[in-house]
Image (cartoon, rainbow, N blue to C red; front, top):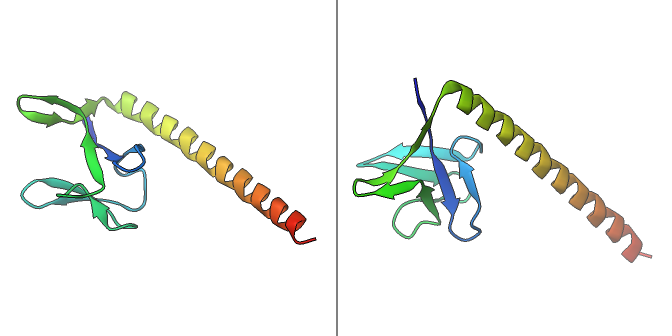
Length: 105
């Protein structure tokens, strides 16, 4: 059995992620499949801030399909990236707090 891995790209930042790895992700099926971000109310529709990522051919944009084992590996990688982002934000907040304290003197 193969599983779809649907990716979207934020057109403004260039950041790509797998749909479903963010709690704000939503897929809508209305005459086609559309991505919608519940946090910023943007999506893949006309003029939207997101676009699907995949390989294109004469049929259109193709979604990647992976085996269960490949999906497990992708999940592990996503967990590592999430921990790295969390650590980055913690370090950033710590530095901001430390700098804030030094400017109040």
